[in-house]
Image 1 (tube, rainbow, N blue to C red):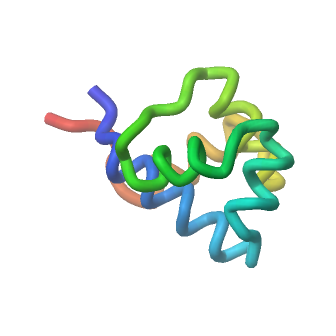
Image 2: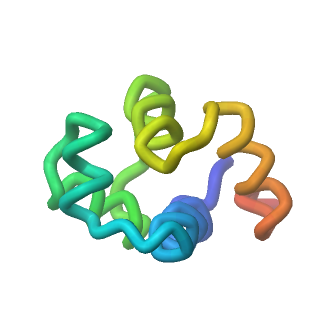
Length: 78
C-alpha cells in the first residue's frame, strides 16, 4: 500500500523546491487547488492520470517523479 502522507509530503517538497505555488501547479495539472492541497496533506491519493499531470506540472516525467518519490522516502507501507 502507498503511504498517502509520505507521497503528499514529497510532492509538496518538490513543488516548494521549484518555488511554485499550489495555484500554479494545480493550474498546470488541470486539477483544483483544493484537490492538490488534499493530495499534499495525504487525504487523497492521485489517480494515475492526476499523477502524470502533476509530474508534468512539476517539470518532470512521470518516471522521474516516481524515482524522486522512491529516493526521498519510502512511500510504501509495510
